[in-house]
Image 1 (cartoon, rainbow, N blue to C red):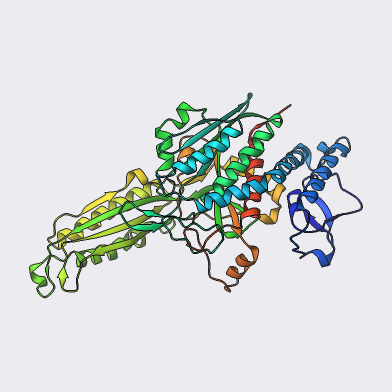
Image 2 (cartoon, rainbow, N blue to C red):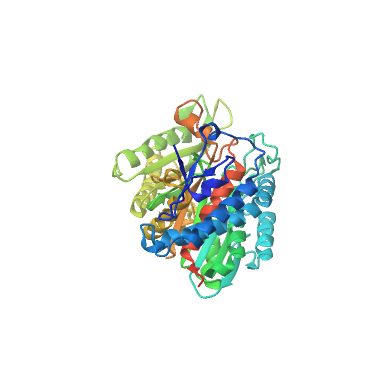
Length: 500
């Protein structure tokens, strides 16, 4: 049976033979016959570059030889232009993959924590300057902004985040991070790109290279930003407050991507509308009166008060919130006391609060303060301190529906319907949302990064799920960056103006 593949799928390590007759009526896909014995051929010594060049030549021949009026057939001008763009992007990818792989492994092995991305930012700035971008550094901390003007047309912003996490890496890969440092509390910690920001940066650089090298095929302005402090929810706010949309061209569109530990490489996921939620961090200091554990009647026990608060907080979601409006209140940290027989004077708690709507968010935060103060009052304890970290608040991310539809249509044509997944919203957070909230239409999508066999094993319950922020997570480099650069480049070209 003939195997149907999109042009992009031609890069794989397989021998693909064209059918006897090519069908020019549908330029979004090519039809090939793969001998059954070769469908699972995974030899690593095949000449991928030769196959790539063959695919590009074939695509261009199709465009040149397509019969007159093909645009009026079922595929229309969209498919005709798409094949041309895809062939051009593939050609650039073929030339850049080796150096992008080197860049990825360097970034992975040299992570930096939030607010400390100085060397990472310098490396990305150097990459953009080499491509002809006008680069400004130190925008909102270690943020960088690269601008490439190329005639009259839309302005498209493409963002990457840069910071890593305080995690000791246990992936065992040859390029694993061995960096250690002191965190803000003075603790010795490892540093790891456990959320895929190294892959985000690599795809960002790859997209910049592709688009810069294809300047004669599009018109408009590119604004490439390297954002600091995403992991603490502060970077986008810092860059905006430092004049991102005032000192530099204001974008007509903004694009971003994120690694996904649930999808196999070669796949992407997205939502129309709500994608990610409001995220608040709350610190609570419960005050009491310390004393000997044998004489609790002479104390005011903050541990008992904290236990009451934790239980009562659950009613905010289960009894005060509309069940149709998702919400989460999680106490992720509680610390109090030093010894078995000492009742402490205070207990510290840390909460994460998630909501999809701003009115629900307001009620949850008010409820936390109300419940905490009521528990202290009932115990005749001093008033507790409730601190809501407004600076690190991450607003809910709503993809602009029109941009999501327009871009996902391109993804389906380029990658294939079976590799593009409309997903349900997640209860995670992403400060990319702030750019869209500033009135810029935007689209944020997810990049599959795991081996397909691992994803299938997880689905069948034969392997434990692996998540972002795990000390074992890492994306499979080459196929992940290939799909990331291809999808982001095609998304940008679809928003920019086509050169005459």
